[in-house]
Length: 225
Ligand code: CA
Image (cartoon, rainbow, N blue to C red; front, side, top):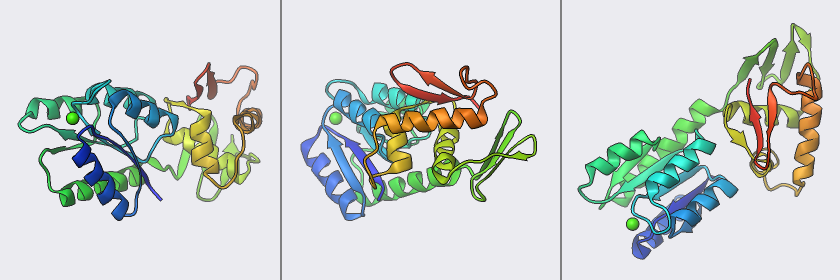
């Protein structure tokens, strides 16, 4: 089930957004504040954010920019206030994927949400990837270094796939837990670290001084392949 974060401070509109998105089959989390919305988005990244611009705490532009810094591929649909076309341009410059001008028809917003989710699904999940002398095929689950096969488990392929999807960006341990383990079990962030140690042993020529999967103190990991 796709999870959508709605950040909108107008109570009636927030209720209407939550109801409609829930009816469409999404799991919905809502916030009325920009700062709280940002926190929710970074803590446990949703599949898409519906984001108002004028918000208490932190405005939609700042929220959009911060989310995109950490999660460049996370789609954001912005809700612009009436007659504020400048807002729209600025939002798109900051990386918003789409915008809907208030007042809007709910059906239009639902359609845009669907399109944005489909777009990210098509573009972001890599089927194969090469870096350095390593080539990985995520569909066949094969990996080679210089033509020699590497031994990786299903879980390790999935972790690498998440890294490749978010290459260059910080990936937190919680994000890895959500995207790789999901809600099937409750491993700890320590589990994640153990997997990273093992992945480095396989992929890095110098596991103690990794060049591909680097640690970002207090935040998580960054894949530089
Ligand atoms: Ca507002």
